[in-house]
Image (cartoon, rainbow, N blue to C red; front, side):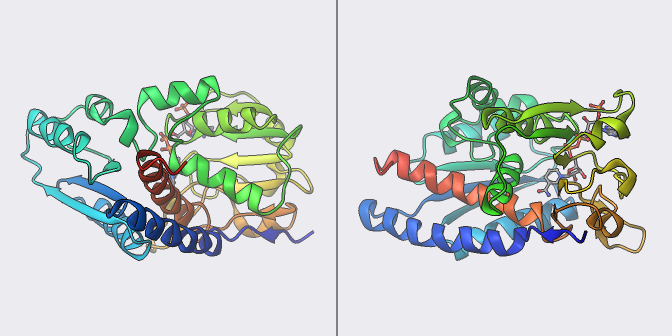
Length: 286
Ligand code: NAP
């Protein structure tokens, strides 16, 4: 069987076009565009590219970007003061702090300083707690993008046996909770999981986020499974590849997402979505 492709790039474009219309409606009602503050500390080249891509996508969707590029030497107190300013700025509806932060700054403290009402990344413990409760305000962008990809392909989640590979706070755990909320039966695997291959073979939905290039091989995947690859790994030749061995696995899966062009573009689209939703909430449009 040759799998059908879940094209995250095409879906992200559709989402962004819809958001441009919604941003225009917010502007018409309030006189203000939805606004995202982007905060980048230091000069890590990969982070610079990620932030630039997010900013470009914002501009195309009619979202105002409030750009802050800060020196690595900034103190934690100075960074917290900037976040506090953005928390109370009415032009700002979402705040993005690009990770990783320099070692002298505690990421946890910084992420907790972002107002839960402007937490466009969905990383604040308040929003993660609301997700556990089943009533999230902001949902983390990457797992939310994965769910949208599955749903947009018309794949049912309810009642399915889902296996999530990876248990990070930003991808694996929230993704497992979102699947559970949609009535999947969910197993979460990690580096200490025994008989990993046989657990994966039971999956009707296999969601992979571990950061190991081509780790999931065809023998770990059951015939007809839906495979979503969150992994982003750089190969020695500079090319990007996922955590799934794409060619052989796509011969067994019914649906598969590629890397690049899968979850990555949807993560950015969901950041925009969260920002526009936040602006609509503040404008009483939800
Ligand atoms: P992370 O924080 O490093 O977590 C990795 C998880 O994978 C951990 O739970 C770890 O288990 C598990 N793991 C590692 N090796 C394993 C193995 N051999 N067998 C089973 N489990 C294993 O990573 P992350 O932030 O979730 O990111 C995961 C991948 O997704 C990375 O490639 C990252 O670049 C990518 N990513 C992509 C996007 C996007 O927008 N496309 C967004 C975020 C992340 P333990 O908990 O036991 O250590």
